[in-house]
Length: 186
Image (cartoon, rainbow, N blue to C red; front, side, top):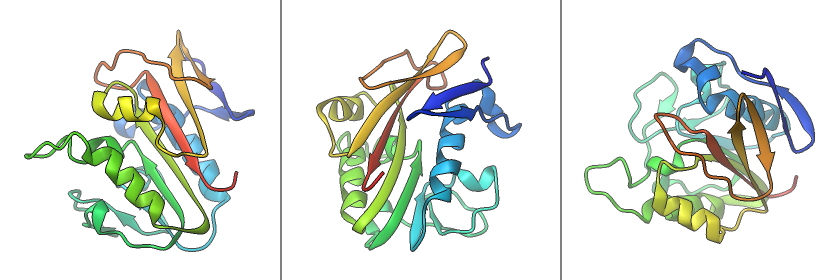
């Protein structure tokens, strides 16, 4: 595995945490991107889905409908009201309505649009979604969901590479292609 990748012109080290074997899945690129992005955030924000607290101390609110953990509020994403200056979601939106007893194939896309509507004027959102996990959401993302900037980061051989177009790699227990969307000022 190549230990570096480039995203939006900056070079990052891949994440190599023991928890969840990050070097072997999409967390290898999601976590460094999120960590850098969070450094540029200020104001009132929230993480959708309890991801980052497994890797570093999270000094910001986290909401997750199901996961029971210290500091995590069990809130349905559709109950968020904002306004938020920033929102971070790492591989979470694709589960909304999809991994639930009553499957709603459109809930994931609606949840992204709902959370984006909770941004304060000038607010920012970063969302990552594994390609191939939720084919109905993939179709919405291909058509466009309203992100100001979007790209795919795909595993090519042993290197994660950013593309300005949709790139699909088969999902085999982990993403080999990842959609990254950003809303708001760069």
